[in-house]
Length: 145
Image 1: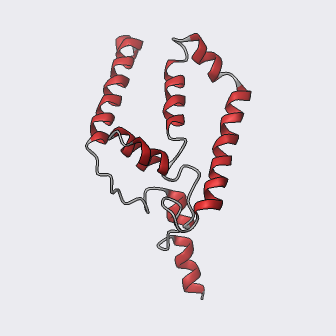
Image 2 (image 1 turned 180 degrees about the horizontal axis):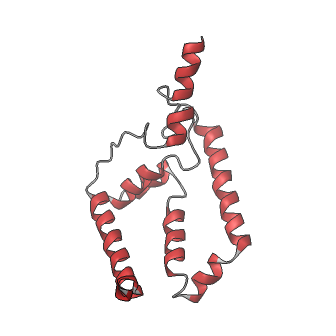
């Protein structure tokens, strides 16, 4: 029973899952309908701070980095943080980054700052910062009018 939770087995399983996700995403369609993927956007109609991240990863996995950066300029950040979390116990510098509250706070501030900048410059006319007119909020407003 103990061998099931052995770190080497879990590490292999995690690597296998990551490989499957990469294979799936490389063959994924770039024209993904995004209106209902994000709960925030489907409910309010407004883009969320991570809006465009899925399409950015799809483009990046297809080696189209120009469009990936267009959809979300911080798309490498979640992957970088994922690597830090996964390997924090194996690599000392990753553990230091993981436990550094100042660095994490700075990353959150940068993420929110980019969101505000993109919202002010791109909303509501430029993808992925368009308004979702099929949202629940907009539907309720239409009913009330």
